[in-house]
Amino acid sequence: MSAFPNERPDADEGFSNTLGIANGSSPSSPANQMHLYDQLCTGPKHFADCCVGISQPLLATLASRLPRSPALILSIGSGSGLLEAMLLKHSENPLDLFGVEVSSCVNKHLPPDRLAKVPSTTSLHPDAMLASSLMFVYPRMPALITAYLDAATGGALEQVVWLGHRSDWPDFASVMRSKSSSIDVIEGSGLCDSELLVVATM
Image 1 (cartoon, rainbow, N blue to C red):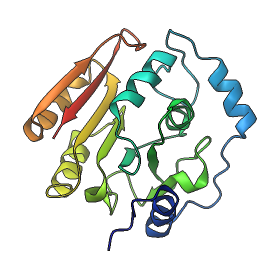
Image 2: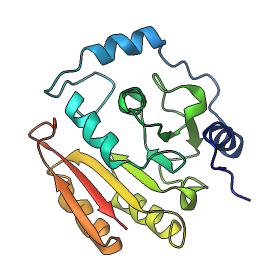
Image 3: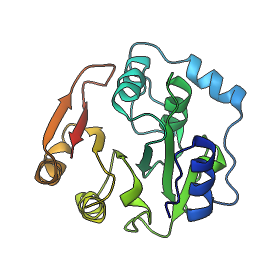
C-alpha cells in the first residue's frame, strides 16, 4: 500500500508517518515568511540561509514545471527550507512538495509536516520511488543523484530538477543525461547569471 494516497491531506499525513518529522524544528512564522516573500522582485535576491538567488520569475518558472498535487515532489537537501517555503506560497496550484534533510541541518522555514530527515548526506529517502519529481538545489555529490535515479527505477519518477551554479553543471550533466529522455537547460527566468536551472524528463 502506498504511503502517499491521492488525496492531498492524506498524502501529507502519509509522508509524516513514513519518515518521521524532525523534532525541534522551529520554522519561521507566517508573518516572517510573508515579510521575506514581499522582498522578492524580478531580479534574484540572496538570503543568508539559501544558496540560490530567489526571484518571482524563478518561482513562477519552477511552479509551472513541477507536477501538481497529488504528484509527490521531494526536494533533496532542502537546507533551511526557504526556497521550498516560498515556492509553496507562490504556486497557484497545490504542490505536494516536501523537503528532505539530515538531522543536523536546522529547518527554518518549512512547516514541520513538510520536512523529513535522513540519517546522513549519503542516505536515500526511503520512498524515492514514489516521487514523481526530485528536486536538487546546489547538490554536492553527483553520486547521490545517481543513487536516487537508480532507486527510482521502475517507480513513479517522471522528472528531475537541478538548480545550481553553472560551473557545477558539467559534473552532473552526464548523470542526468544518462537517465533521461530529454534535458531542458534554462537560463534567465529570474536566475542569477551564474546559475542554471535544468529540468530532465525521465
